[in-house]
Length: 406
Image (cartoon, rainbow, N blue to C red; front, side, top):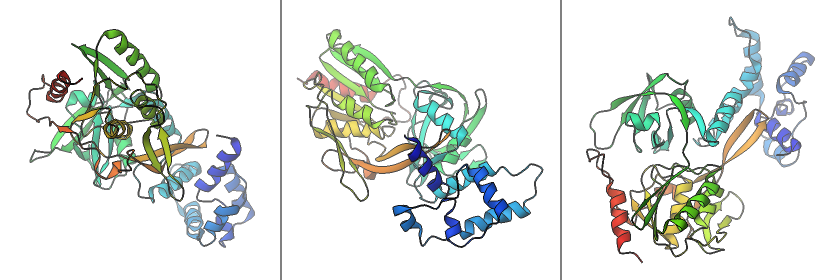
C-alpha cells in the first residue's frame, strides 16, 4: 500500500480527526498542537466524496468527551492518549455490528500477522459468531484445544469467569489467548448434552500444519488444515506426490478447516476445474460482482474425488467445496458446513496497526449464498458424540464410495 493511501486511511479511521472543527467545536492553540502530536497528522479537513458524506455528521460529542477526560479524569497513571485513539477506532468499527470487521492496535496487529503466517500462542481453535453465539468453528489438529476435547460447533458460554453474550469476537479472542503454559477454562454448551461442561486448556505456541498426505490402496488422502499464504505451494507438492504414488482417486479432507486466503482456494480449485470455469463470485456494495475463475492446472480434472466436510469447514473451505460440488468434480460427504461467506481485507492504518474489514460476500458459482446456510453434503454422515474415537465413519464412507467410482 502506498504512503499516500495509508495516510488518507489513517485520517478517516480516527473518526475524522479534524472534521469536528467544521462541526463547530472550538479548540485553542494548545489543544490543536496536542492533537497533531498525538495523531501525527495535521488538522486538515477531509475533501471530496468523504467530505460530502460527513457534512451532516456531528463530531462535537466526540471532542467534548475527549475534553472532559483531559480535564477531569484522575488516575495514578498519566493519560495514554494514543490508547484513547485506538479505543476510538475500535468503537467506530464495533458500531458496524460485523464480528469479522476488526481493528488491530499494535499488539493485536502483531498477533494477527503471526497467526496468518502459521504460528501464534493460544489454544489453537478458530472461533466465530453463529446465530449471535460465540461458537467453535474448528480446533486445529494436534493443538491444546483438540487435545482437551473441544469440538467444532461447541458454543462458548464463558471464558474463565466472563460470560460471552456481551463480548465482541475480538474481545473473546483476547480473553482466550495468553502466554504459553497458562490455563483458560471454557464453559461450553454441546449439542446433545443437557448441561454445560467446563474444559480447561493449557495455552501453548500453536504451529498450524499445512497439509498431510496418506495413501490407502488406490486412494490418496490429502488433509488440508487451513488456507494459509503457503497452501497453494504446499498443495502443488501434494499433487506431485499423488501423481507419483500410483493412486487413482482422491479424498480431500477439509474437516475443521476454518479457511484463510481466497487466492489459495481458487488456486487449489484450479487443479480440478478447466481454465475459465467460475470458482466463486464476490459480491460488493454498489458495484458489479468480481468473478474468480480457474487457472486450469488440469492434473486432477478427471480424478474421482470426495471432499470431507463438517461444521468446522468454513470460509475458503466452503468456496472450494461449493465450486467442486456444483461443477460435479467432487461429492461432499460429512455434515453441513459452517456458513462463513464474507470476505475480509487487511488494510494497514499505520505501520503497526491495521483493520480487517468485510468488503464483500461470496457465493458458489451458481450464485448461492454461502453465509445463509453453508453447504449441504451430498452424503450426510454424522459423527456420534459417544462413537468410537478410533473409527472415522466419514472417511470410511468416502472410501466406500470411491471403490465403485471410475
